[in-house]
Picture 1 (cartoon, helix red, strand yellow):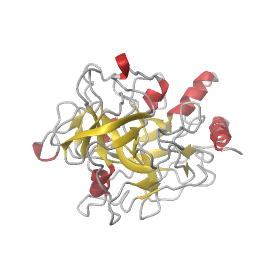
Picture 2 (cartoon, rainbow, N blue to C red):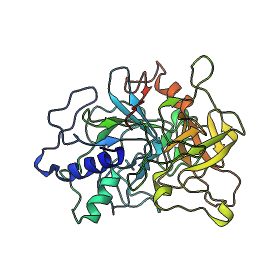
Picture 3 (cartoon, rainbow, N blue to C red):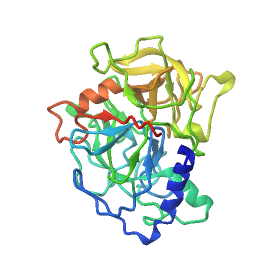
Picture 4 (spheres, helix red, strand yellow):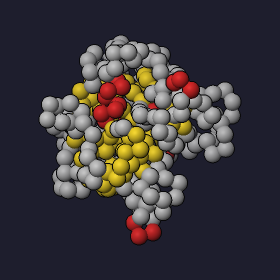
Length: 343
C-alpha cells in the first residue's frame, strides 16, 4: 500500500470508528486497547484543530516537528500562540467567540485531558461526506501538554512583566520562543513526510520529498541557527489550502514557500522572505535542499508590501527551552525527531 493510500485509509478508518469508545490518557500513561486513534497518523505540516468543529471560528494551526521524548512519549511541536483563548471574558474583536475547548494554562505541565487536538483534514473529509463532526467519527489524536509561558492572551504580559507573543503571532523583541508541546495518543503513528490537503506527499524546492527527519546542527551535533542569507523552506496548512502569492509574488503565502534568512529580530527569532499566513503557525521550516528542521512558523505581516516580516522560531531556541533543567515538568525533554523511512 502506498503512503498516500495509507493516509486516506487511515482517515476513512477513523470515520468508521463510531462504534469505539473515546479513550484519552494523561501524560505518561498508557492507552486502553483498542484506541479510537488507532489507524491515525500525524505528520509535519498537518492541519490541526482544537475544537472539532470545522465551521467554528476557533484556532487552527499546523504541526511542525514530531518525535519522542526521553520517556518514550509521542510528541508534536507547534506554535504556542495557537493555544485557544482561555480567559472567561469574551475575546477582543477579531478573535471570534469563546472557544469550545479553552486553552491550556501557560508554563505548567498539563496532566489532564481537557485540551484535545484534532486532525482538521479529517474534519474536512467528514464535512464533504456529510458526516457531522463528533468525538466518535473524529476522536482526538492527542492533548496539549505544555504552552510556552512567553505567549499570552491580548493585554497580558510574559514572565517578569515582559512583552510576549499574543494573538496571531504579533512579535515582541522580548520573546525568544513560541511553542506548544502536544502528546499524541500512543496508537497514533508518527510520520516524517509532509503531506498536502489532498494527502499527497509534498515536493520540496531543491529536489526530493519535503521531510522533517533531522535537526539543523553544528559540527558538534548541537542544534544551530541558519546563517543570514541562507535559504529556508516553510510549509503551512492554510497556505496549502488558500495560497496567496500576492502582487508580483511579494506575499509568497504559498506552500511550500522558499525564502532567505533576512535577519534576526532577536536571538533565534528569524525574519525571512519565506511566506506564511494565519493558520500556518507552527508549520515546519527546513534548510533548503535538506530534511533538517530549522524552525517553526510564528508570525506573518499585516501587509504584503512590508519588508520581510515573516518570523519563524528556531528549533534551537525551542529545544534549548524544552531541555532547560529549570523548566517545570518533563514532557518533551530529550526530544528525538522522528525518522520514519516509510513516510
